[in-house]
Length: 312
Ligand code: NAD
Image 1 (cartoon, rainbow, N blue to C red):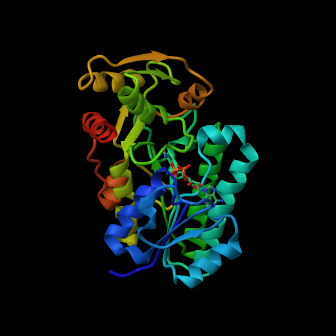
Image 2: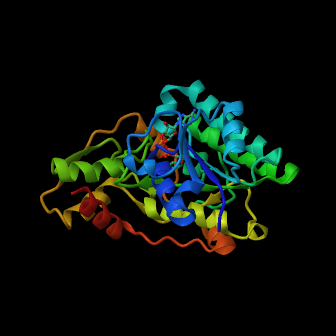
Image 3: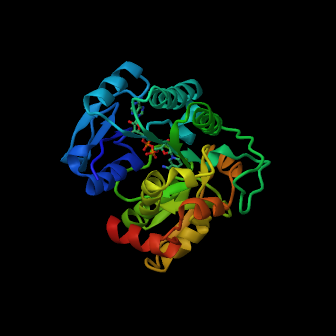
């Protein structure tokens, strides 16, 4: 099937692997990677690449028209930990980029949008275990507020203007190909890198901080499967809960020790602990399973094997 797909924020942790996966599926020339900065990853040179600021509507529209883009994956955003340092910049990037793609779809210049939300939409008063799809949401971070607001706008544009926007609430994502981009779950990547490089790791989250996590291959597959699913079966146009596994730092450490027995972990929590404490421990994703057949493939054991084998 031929279609033209544009990725905004393609140089990031998700965007890099998403670009490769979409090019494998739809052909290198049909997937246009773009970012506000040049790519340092040679794998993005397998097809078209454009320098593009996702908050610049006119520049975005030009690229969409030039390549006759049908689908947009919006990955440009400022993540949770960085956003706490630059609240206004985070709000402006996260909201304006979303409005730009929603308005392009409203004006029928593109057909379909994928925009990721996050478990950051929840807050301290949300039920922590098996957090339901529909529940109390009082996010306490700038990032969470921007994602929750984004969800409401996606739902609104779908209901009011028929915009085909699709979204999942990603948990913390674990990958080895690209550096993480300043999130609260980045420890779950650093721990593997340092296990290989140093044999020890000091976690910025304390023992017992259980958070929902997902291996990148599952996340990429989720995004593509949701985009390819039958739109008439999608009952959620804000954002789907999405789960795979949940663990605390000491559980990753134990899992690493099963392959590297001398690995040690210590704890030195910083400001990210408060962010993590406001997020759920595990997610009920039954609606995604029911509506479009979501099913994760990676548990902690398989993730650890993939991470350690590929990083070393
Ligand atoms: P990242 O920080 O690794 O990548 C974001 C990319 O956007 C970067 O390459 C950056 O250069 C680019 N960018 C920044 N400003 C831009 C602009 N104005 N125009 C164009 N590009 C710009 O982020 P990621 O981890 O790949 O996350 C992608 C999306 O997934 C975000 O919406 C994020 O909130 C969401 N998400 C990520 C995670 C995770 O664990 N990584 C979890 C939940 C949700």
